[in-house]
Image 1 (cartoon, rainbow, N blue to C red):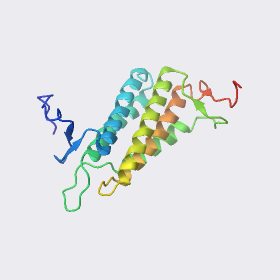
Image 2 (tube, helix red, strand yellow):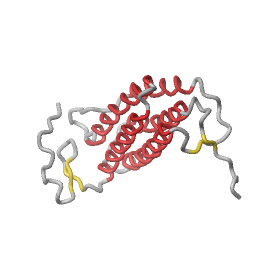
Image 3 (cartoon, rainbow, N blue to C red):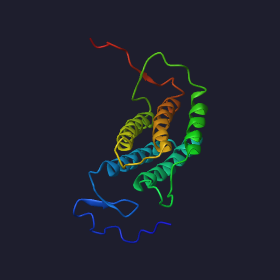
Image 4 (tube, rainbow, N blue to C red):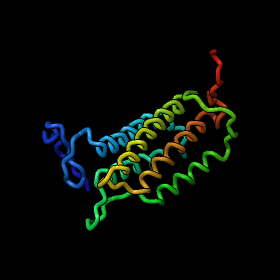
Length: 190
């Protein structure tokens, strides 16, 4: 259980922060930046949800994703170490649920013949912002996983990869199932 009764501790005034394991890292550390960008993705989804109240199914999916992103942040904040008790980790079942929801949202959409520009309805535009922030988080997590002695679960990487796909499909869903998509016209302004 998390108890937050004192918000400031002054322990980060030196430019460091504590991981979930208690280990101190610089605030610019790649692991800290990775879970911070996951948190940023979550914040953008909070903004998206201001515009999805009338789409109850999608809003419920986004609520589950927000909770998953806290799980993912907790996963990244505690590096996996051999011999240590396991902490909260993202599971393959969470990735599977995302895939199922992508399929559900994608079923009524017409195939695309062009790339989609961010835009259309406000919820769609914010979903594109969330998608790009998610892609940045994914790049950071993949870079972190490539570092020696910086373990990252495979499910965490897969979750972020699927999430960006989900956010793209969700943007088309809120754009009247793709009818309101703004399509890229190559070379239009030459």
